[in-house]
Image (spheres, rainbow, N blue to C red):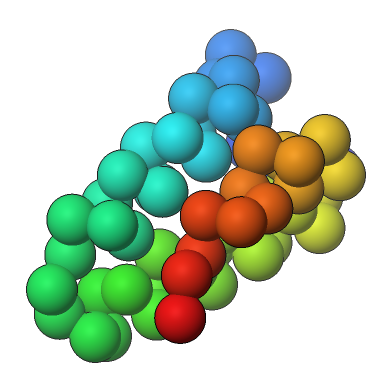
Length: 57
């Protein structure tokens, strides 16, 4: 069972989360965003290619 709804595109969610992760200056928000991205990557391996190299230090 996927954590995503069937009408929701994983890459759209990933791009949104990466955008929020990059824009956020709050450390806790960043951690939450990247945690959600990790869950997405685990549930949809294809998302990994989209995320790779985006996280930064």
